[in-house]
Image (cartoon, rainbow, N blue to C red; front, top):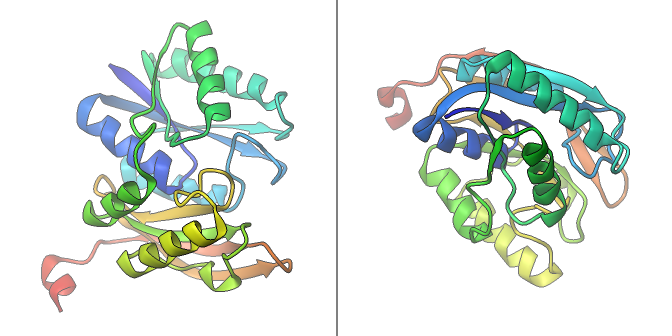
Amino acid sequence: MRVGVLWSGGKDSTYAAWLASKKEELACLITLFPRSDMSYMFHFPNLKWTRLQAEAVGVPQLTAPTEGVKEEELGDLERAIADAKKESRLEGIYTGALASVYQKTRVEKICEKLHLECISPLWGVDPEAHLRSLVSDGFSVIVVSVSALGLEQSWLGRELDESAIDELVALGKRYRFHVGLEGGEGETFVLDAPMFSKRVEIRSSAKHWQGDRGFLEITDAALVPKPTRMEQAA
């Protein structure tokens, strides 16, 4: 099928896009830009840098604005998917939904209305296993926002390597949050992935902390060549 991916630049949508690229004809990435960080459907921090990721993937990115108001933003999503279907001749939509019934069911309803197949390849997977798959499959992911008890300012900008995952799993059990950060406990940004031709390099950033929550603002970034195997070994 020719498919589009609902794309936020985070770990789940990027992993879903990679799975789609291995099985389908990946035709475009669809990104909604909310004007509010209170959106129930869409990521908020650092979306402007998703253009670098899309360039690294090598497929068109179709963007649309949304006010980010609960339920009303679904109309914006429907219009964006309808436009993408027409422009890219889509037959299906991939999502990175892990456990959010709210998000999954609403995208499925829109796809049904537009006669598109909706595929959520990560739905129901064990969140810890998913995080470890990201590392083993060559994804480079950093945390760019946190808003859960137990996740402190030090997590902002931290890469999700095995050590970080161990700590995140322990904190999730202690403070009872979703380890995959599916419930809004945190958001991520992908710097590198198997289907990227180049990697994203963050050249400057700023942390914004509000007592018990915050986000990392990427203020400058660029695409750079990936290190060679010799450089990685060194």
